[in-house]
Length: 329
Image (cartoon, rainbow, N blue to C red; front, side, top):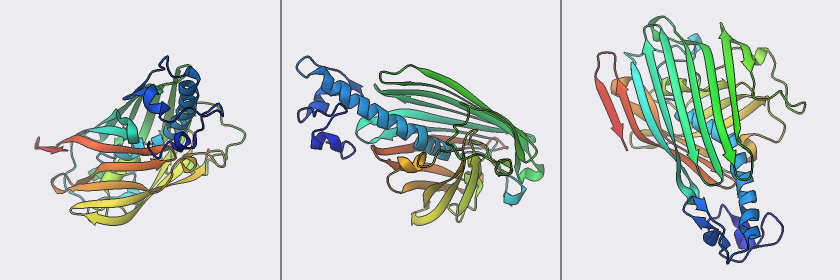
């Protein structure tokens, strides 16, 4: 049995009464779970309740960071403080990633697209997670202006909508919008009213921040010789956090970074990615010198119930002169 499910070895289920050894194989078929007559339904139901809860916690907190990391496939820096001295940047980037989760194998896909048209940019991303105990559909978009000579970006609007269904629970459909004015967030329509237990987000913390698409895309425009030495200030409409990248090693032409989420505000003490991430998040960055960018090739997020990995399936880059660059797995 996978180490991500130690309660199987210990003989404990969600109800407190342990199922027989090997019950999980009997309840599972690939990604789908079926209760068979010769195995008491309470075993499968109690185990799935526990597993569903842990999967929910994992994707609700660590999933945001992972999805944001692989969205770093775009074309501009976060602002004048991160000015670039580069050649021509891509006019279009289209990337597809596959999502795997330990023993479940491939459970979803992530698609990202970015475009620059003159002095404006438009970003779109969609994610799909499909298992018997957790289904998720998410769509994100961001738009804004590219500063003169492509030295920075000025985000104008960010939108996020998702549909989520967990085992034995009602479907959730929610959305979030962030509006920007100058260097600061001007308006937010949140998922839910802030919890009184959450650390308040101050007005000062909403200045010079980046939404999860416009912000994280700056990762691909870092120093091609050392893309791991970066820190991204992110606000997702509810929480304010930094994503800190640190060089770890080289793997051929690739740069391997360690990644840490530093929570600042908007979260409840003891909650967030730190409560489910179990180990070191690792990101592999692959330089594309012809396109003057580095791309996130893969990211691995160890959690308390297993390891989530996002790996590049294909990346198609179109330069302003229509030259095409294709990267395949």
